[in-house]
Image (cartoon, rainbow, N blue to C red; front, side, top):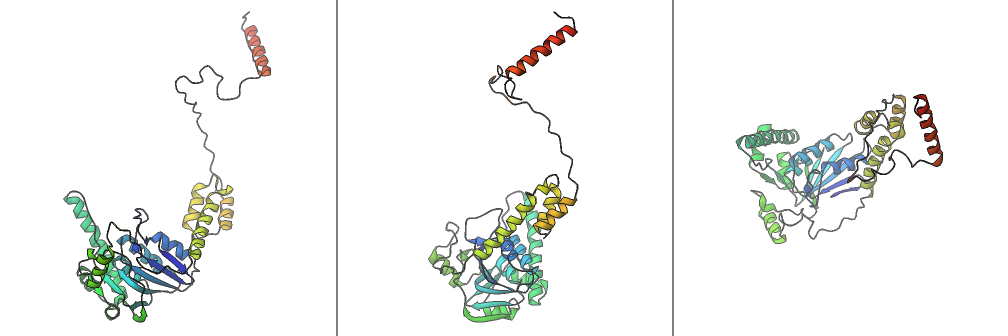
Length: 327
């Protein structure tokens, strides 16, 4: 995970990844960003620093939505690179600033399909829908038409800070130099700048090499604020789901924990006022025996009989015999 929170700054470094299919590379997911945002007040102003070659398109869209939905102001600073899905994330900024020497890249999403012609057709439909959604985001930021943004995407367009600002995808460029570019095999891109291609080749960045920040300085920021936010979210969920009041009200507890922002005290009070579900009687299932194990022993439903139990059973047996005229 490469999400670092320091005061009002969130740093996103590495590729945009999916939590469902972890790659083991340096990067971040929408879940990481969700936990980072959870540590801020609703009205807090946040600056997001991005140094990412992109990655999973749908994750990029989810992160963009998370940042865009934050009630407080969100600004973005591109350090090093914001390419592919990372460029979409950058569009969430009220003000997008390109650091000196940084680059932005916008292109069409891609996918790999294995299957018959129908499978490939479905992938094409999904990619077209995703590309159109991306183009609308770029258009909203730049003021260009969706069709114009779509053509920019199809051409795989790379922007310097000045070009990104001129095209409307950034608002300003900074004289301050950006961070070292995120490690990635930039040879995979069609129109990547020669400088990035040469850097990837010299560093041997490729699919067989984890995308670690080569020669990058270790961040001085502590990650404790993010850890505290994540732990607070987990503690709240656990406190609601594991409370005594949740027993018999499991569905309500799950709704309050995951679908509302109620405090633990509020959720517990609400559950306490709701009726519990009637307990479901469990059908007795006799213990399974293997290889006739225990057949000559007393039943496992209780402890072996005591002398007192044996006497009672003998007396009961005698009474039964007398009732039925058995000597």
